Image (tube, rainbow, N blue to C red; front, top):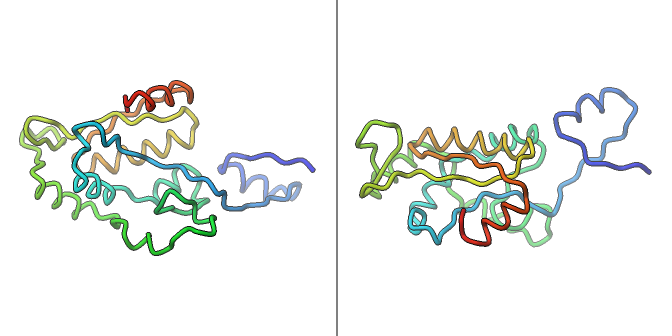
Length: 173
């Protein structure tokens, strides 16, 4: 038996060739985006919760892995026996208009017209760390655009995995 993971973009081509058997299954791991809540910018849980509504998870999956997979709403994969499907109802739905309203309610506004909201002189701007693998970068780029739609500036910093872990461990994310 020869087995290897393949990039999602190659699956249709390999299926159409008739030379390969493609086995698709849900993994028990997840990919996730996490706010560093030790940073002042993300100390407010209401802000973090509001920002979740700026992300269309299906768009991220479509860009990253051609729509294979499914959104997870907890730190457990939907493939894990104890995954709670009720969690899907707790997560904010993708709704940029609601995000804009909540940001305004929390005091965030684009007072200088640069497209980025600010509050008390602090711009809602941050750098997201990611590894340089193509699907991960594509996912980050979709999120960057979705955040921009609600006035949030997200820069992307691609780091090798060991460096990323080191920065996260030091709270520099």
